[in-house]
Image: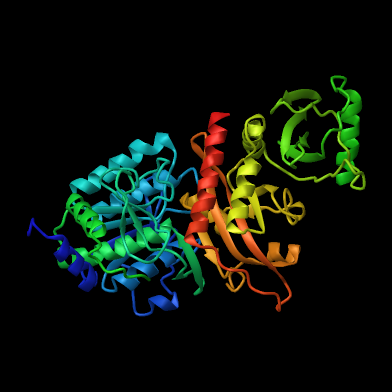
Amino acid sequence: MNEWISPEQAADAMERGDGRSVRIAVLDSGIESSHPNFSGRRLYDDLVPEANGNIGAGKGEDLYGHGTAIAGIIWKLAPKAEIGSFRVLGSSLSARTAHVSVAARRCISLGYKILNCSFGCGISGHLPLYKEWVDNALLSGIHVVAASGSPEVSEWPAHLSSVLGVDCALSNEGGLRYLPGRMVEFAAPAAEVRVPWKHGGHRVMTGSSFAAAWLSGMLARLLSVYPEIDPFLAKSLLRRVAREGKHSSKTV
Amino acid sequence: LLLLYRYFWIVFLLLDSTHERPKLAGRFDAIFSVISGRYQVLYGQFDRTGDFGLLLSFKNGKSIRKDLGDSAWITCIDFDKNSPAGRSKPCKLTQSVIAALLDLHHLQCTQSIAGVLRNAFAVVGADEGTIWLLDEKQEALVPVWSSGPYGERFVGIHRQPLTAGLMSLICITEQALCENAVYQNAQQDPTLDRRLGVLTCAMIAVPLRFRDAIHGGVSCVRLKPVDAAAPEPPPFSATDLAVVTDAVREVERLVEAA
């Protein structure tokens, strides 16, 4: 492995990479696999973890449309990436953290390279539950990308140090931003993005959820060129790429 | 049913000797709630800005008082919509919504939550904003306060299942969102727009977290009349989303400090 990838090389990889062979787990509300935007694609996995540790089939359904939007952004940026759906967001708020933990552990065991978490949990007591699988991901060389729309308010998993926490940039111009001195160190372009939604529809959305998807897509590009970059090296490279403005300001 | 409520209320007032005489300094509002199959009556006082100042609850004939500020106690309610002092707005709320309301209203003596939110809504050019709270079973969102003229027609009446809609989504993800071109989206649930006779053009939705839990969210919208010739308001920007998010964070801080 090339330990000394320069920011220029990383930026170039983020420009020309296509996400090939990078497997991304979308922990979200499910993905509507029959959406017209996804014609010719297939989900690598489509699973619905349960709190008791069992895993059910997702059947290509998305409860809200949010996961479909996330997959749409990732595939637009990294068209060769392999996406798996893990439906952890449903109508049960109380079981969410348990579902996320079950799903994340499964993702790690299945060899996913990126876990996209376009959600946050602000319950302080749930921190150990998030930290457990985030640490396991780190030790397995798996990247966790997580949304956080409130950098000053702690939320998991975005505020864990090995996670690529990302907020929505105020403008789509300029691409990835580095926000020094914060637990959520990045802001990505995610304003007025036209995204696929459930029932074959589309919506024009803005928010940190979509910023996380943008970063996952760009990270997939990077990893498709340099597959052995570990989470901390990726974070360090992304800091420099963003700080030095070397990357493209690719939007979706 | 409303008549039954009213009779029940009057009987309550007659039986409850702990009531003081009303001080009709502000506007009045009422919230009716059915909890565990028993009637519970809650009622409160609007202060001069139209925000709640106080809630009292009566259950099983026993008076429970919760002073939520330095406003005067309320001991009766004016049900007459035609009365200049009165305005009734019956609605069903569950216990957790009431608990969250009590948290919110506790701020009255320090700083008005509504003031913080109204300022933010004005800055982003929203026509109206609403506080939504999760019900007791966390299965639905109930609008409990609105800043604008349409609020009276859905606050306490509308009920948004947690299985659908943008407000539900932000409770599930705990991430703020903004959607533009809302009414052009064929999947948009038009129920509320039809009820209000407007089209929602743009919407910001921000989760509301305090006391270590998600309690619901705050939304604000840009509307246009159903008339197709009406001009389209501009979309919300990412900056607008940040402004409303900051205001909601301020509300959360106020609640935590109360």
